[in-house]
Image (cartoon, rainbow, N blue to C red):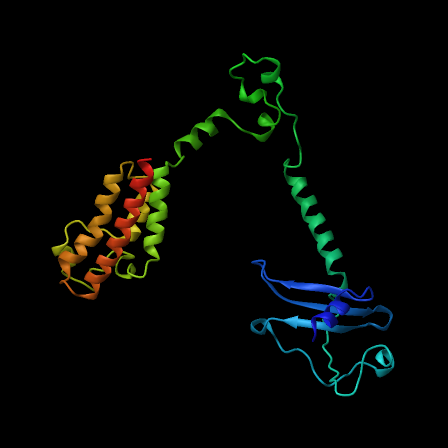
Length: 269
């Protein structure tokens, strides 16, 4: 259809339009229709759906009583009249109003169980007394009502992650999905490789490394590097040069070295 014709259909005041949007915000189609509420049907005047999302639901067999639609919708020579039956319990034309009511109902339920909707006044004490350095947190409006205690603040401080630890989590996560990481995802199975732990005295794998990082066991960068390099060294010591395991270790090691180089460059600034 020409763009001008489509625009005329979409902007016609007798027509309503809906966009079909997936959860990721990607628009996959749109439909423009004219509602004949008294006659219990709607005429689709324009419909466009991405080819990857199309589902056949139309039929050439029109079962709707002809007396209801004859003379109301376009039925011209060369065109194919088709029908698509809708779920009777769903009021498609009132979808916007239904969703709005559902949203209001959900917000009412949330407000009945929380105090998040309450807005407390801001502090004026620092403006009124510029020399004031600190105040009791429990005197701040809303703090006591929230259930906060000084002990809770102390616990959160203890569990706060450093920039180094956050970086370690990111690096291990990226290594786990690296194409060369598959041999090192988890500890070597002794039943599959009986002599592995006879040769390798200090085993290490990405799953164990990830657990150590989550427990914040590497407050010093060199400790993290040392344990990570065990993965590559163990692999190369056990497997001969040129094997696919050797190549995987070399590829992942190169990736890791680049990440360490980036971190040191940022930390030195």
